[in-house]
Image 1 (cartoon, rainbow, N blue to C red):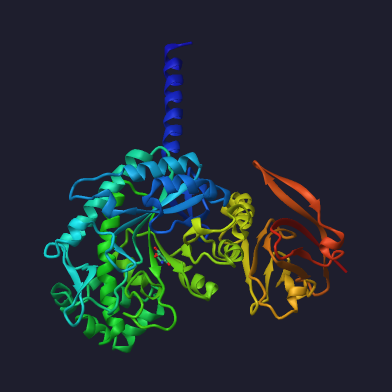
Image 2: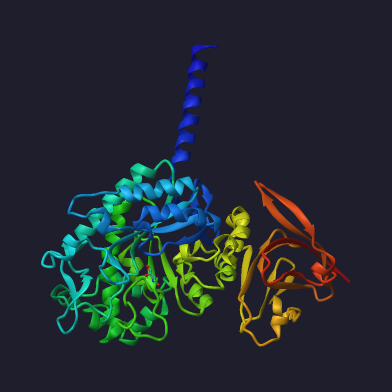
Length: 542
Ligand code: DGJ
């Protein structure tokens, strides 16, 4: 071989291996395409079939080593686990990440990804995870103060010392993660703080807070309000408009006097603080980062709920003040699952549910979250408390969803829809491909004795993926599906239904679902307590 071609060959091999190397080491990131945002891990969409640990579980690695088999049996592909500031920096500047190190090793052993939650300055409003050296030095690390002058166990966001201390620790944490995990991608996302919010009053009355309250509203906020090309959350716009659309002034001048103005002001300052921490961490190791909200449910007013956190009505303020934060997530502990999903699934925010009460119904809701709202992840809280882990209903749903991840990754945004039913929400209809679909709760058939004996109907749910105009994949539990042609002159019929299963990279046909299983060609059905994936081919006749 000529010298020149040897050189070219060596160069090509090197180039190839460099490309391979850089692909291998690309850290998890968010990709927004086709109307949806996906978390990409090793260049593939990663839907988090998750569970969040109870707050103290990750502080005892012996306990953790005992529960990993259960977490695995529950089919979790992602565990959300806290990292405690008080444990990783027990004395100022003295960092010890050995517990996080071991947790990551355990996750790798069980082939599970981690989302790590930075319990830093704030955990459910409070500063209980600040190390004792921070708590005890209240002159240097000042607290929020009530209107009456009482100090709270809440670090004030109006202190540079508080911010610096938290930021330093968070940066160290991200340096550790980079060193430990940059080539492995076990940790796929980081939550910054936990359920930030002011309580029991809507705002902080620390002297620095009072001074900031008198300052002019930042010009960037006014510009945002005045920008007619931006669609804002109605709450913010209405506050500004109802107070005369002022272009200048302090917070009360611009938004009027009241609890919601206090909240807006705090939201700006909480967001700046959390945003700065996020930005500093990302400079070291730019994993996707998010904040989570305790919801303003049950008609409560600011202060009665943890106000000024990353709530849906404050998202525009948060986004402006904290551009480094990628996702605004919600913790659902209240009724109205679909209502909360709708509030957080926005054109500029993907749905991510890092916490939901660990309760019956989640096995149904998860289909709706992924199918209807393109959720990035779903994760019941205190997952290790699930009884009978390998047989739990959510485990069955996760088994089904595991198989669908590659397909959902490809089709989400346009070609999927999700449904969710319960006692008072029994059916829905929509158009997909050439057909009008009618999805109903399985009990609408009246075949199950429990449908008519007065007991509450269990929650059921499913999703549908369009595979072409006449072919669809339906998955879920407790649903029955019928169809109509969009052409008024034609009828819709079932060509065939296969129960399918993904084995490795291949879809395998299992049962041909005909006869009783399709009510002799009348419907597709996945009864309550069954968890299934079925592929249906429809046709039209006259
Ligand atoms: C929401 C918090 O984010 C969790 O850490 C935990 O405290 C739960 N509430 C408890 O219900």
